Amino acid sequence: MTRFADPASFAAALAALPESDEASRTAALNRQARLTKPTGALGRLEDIAVFMAGWQGCERPEADPVQAVVFAGNHGVTAQGVSAYPPEVTVQMVANFEAGGAAINALTAACGARLSVVALDLDRPTGDITREAAMSAEECLDALNQGAAALGTDTRLLLVGEMGIGNTTPAAALCAAVLGGSAQDWVGRGTGIDDLGLSRKAVAVEAAVALHSGAATDAFETLRLLGGREIAAMAGAILAARLARVPVLLDGFIASSAILPLLRDNPRFTDHCIAAHCSAEAGHVRLLDKLGLEPLLHLGLRLGEGTGAALAVPIVRGALATHNRMATFDEAAVTDKA
View 1 (cartoon, rainbow, N blue to C red):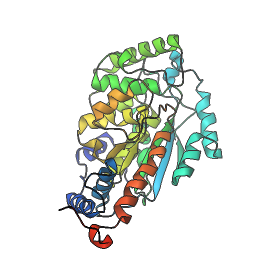
View 2 (view 1 turned 180 degrees about the vertical axis):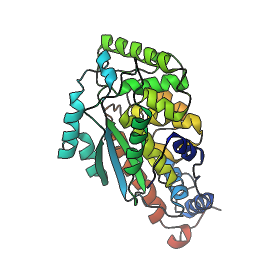
View 3 (view 1 turned 180 degrees about the horizontal axis):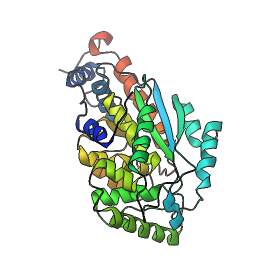
């Protein structure tokens, strides 16, 4: 199990990422070339199959077991009036997840993914990032490790989601701190705030970035100062997946923002990630472009929870089904192109 003893070991793990296995990618490409279809006829399904082969280190990869984890945390910045819902909704929604009544429960059941929920000190919101650090070093390290520990030892495909009232505000602050631009470039309506709430949100992001700009110099400190427990946990889980060579279906704006500080420190960090979808949150299109990821789906979602990633699982299953089960030209006695 991956565990980071201190910020230095987190940084060391981030600096020494395993890469995709090129021999397996080549074998998968060669198989694609022999299947009973014109070359490239299955579009991105072919790319996904080769991607999965490289990370699993075999010519004919499998998706199962698919694991979904939802991390939940509360945020002190909600005191700035940045959300349409009160913080106690986070606790109530965790109970809903555990009872099986949320969208992510329905969608993981539909796509055949096992689901778990990790609640992170919901009775202790993070610090208000407009006035102080979100977390102490110990709290951030604990969140990273809880995320890393959530990865199953047999997982072949991971998707992570989140629940945290107010968490699009720290997500926007992470984007502004790492990528620059104004707060207006990154803030969106989140849970459905009105124009006044959107204005308060932009002010909060500007204040947070200004307060921490001199100290948010690496991935750990950026997550600690501007993130949240569930955001750091997602980063820890996705880093642990990379270290275990497990591909990740990346969910929406918040999940994408969680890995942005890691990508700044290691530009190859997203190599094991597929963007499942582009959400309706205003900054997600821009963020995916900066991450260098093209989403599989555009469905206007803005729920979080990992719902967009769960909806993309059947696409990966379809890619692997065609890759593994189609006949080759020789097996089907079909004449190949001249």
